[in-house]
Image 1 (cartoon, rainbow, N blue to C red):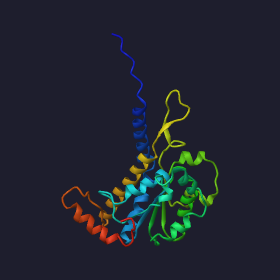
Image 2: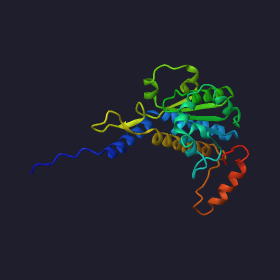
Image 3: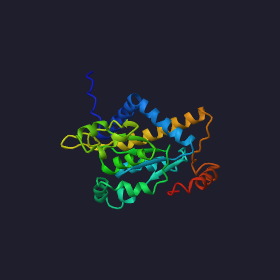
Image 4: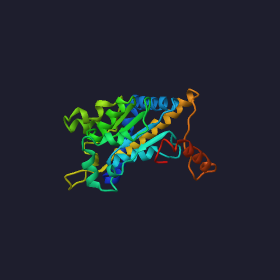
Length: 252
């Protein structure tokens, strides 16, 4: 009997397979950076500080992913600027993230102190507001953990170092994204579809959280984290944490 050739995986199947490969790559060659990021987060929390998380465009979702999350750390301050997201105007958010000087007024309102950690996500690593935010936080004594696509950043070519996020990073993590983020080629199209930066970024964020909690527990340092509101006792846990952090974390 002649065996039939295997059917080519569909575009959706290829995306999922590619996303798994991205995560496998991060788990291996980016582990030292992930561990360093987790140690920075653990040190900040042990010192009574805050972990601030920032991104523009779709990258702002990583700040939301780390904030007020079931199983997520309590000492998280998401930097959520409506004009730099998408729902208030997608084209405008792209224009604003490239504007030099925009980070300064945002930074002035942050409860950021020496010893805090700032996590910044930017696939290209070249938008002015992300680089400037990292620079300002670094100058204020925070440690900077940056999540970018090394491939995209290198492909983008040289930019002003004042706006290049990697310049100010103490810890630099590659999200293994393709140039332009979209990852799947489809016959008949001259551009790829389906980005991976959000899948990769969320995995990186949560790996850092898990590792940081284990570090803190191993040191016998106290650690606070939110519960699901839909399990027994969850509301009481979360209400107490919101009351504790509301003064410093305005999004609560």
